[in-house]
Image (tube, rainbow, N blue to C red):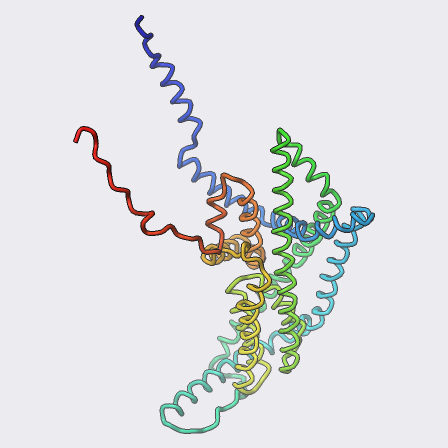
Length: 397
């Protein structure tokens, strides 16, 4: 009995439908561009949302432990959020006096910085000249010469002063928006913590079958444990570093050591660049505060030593090896979020990367992406395994 002829028209229609269902490269590229533009445009809204979600994974284990001993979830959430708010308000209150003093004396500070930079340049030139001449003269101090009223650098100082004042005014105009974002993030964090059980239940109910529901609950617990553990550990380490740098700056006679402690805590969330920014900032303030080059170098060296000890010894010892990240992708993530959301984006770049890795580890289809983000060295196959097996002779031969 002859077989029926294949329906070529039906098979062509099915292939066309499958090709139409797969998005083209151009469509994917346009979607990525629009997504990046939307993230950049909605920065004022998305930034506090992301911060609240990250803080949620840090505090939800504490809330769950409190609920196990009979405390109400909403009450624990309120206590946690109010404690965080009081901590932020206390830091701003302690720093408000020095900041206002700097703002009031900004013109004199700018002129003094300009003069001291010129004096430092003269010091380095004198050191180089003495070294070339073989002299053993003492290193001159950094005390600047008195600036004449009609000096040659008057116009340059005025330009520097105007740019500094305009930048300070720009930040002052953005202060109400920043305060509103902080309040919005804390309020959202309260609702997330008080509704954590309901949120988890709704996520689990969105899956079909007992196996999928159980896998979803396991994934949520793993994300909570790993991401919360990472953020909690890094926050404690950064807090210890901030206290150490604050005490060191106080012992060295630097002004406002509390400000350096807070900046060290925040900047240490930025890998690689944060330590460099802290050393430069401490050295600039020391250049303004002290009159000797040795004091300036001592301040920068102590700051660099403490951050190096933290980065090379303390953090690798306390941070789980499986949560270490690919250094290249970490640097690119910091640069990307700095471009998208400026300084605050740099602070949350690594937590976002860790969150993506933890989530990717729980989705089987994303394991390749999780392995790409991992900082642990994967074991390469042996050379013999990479070689092509010898071809077997065919029966025709």
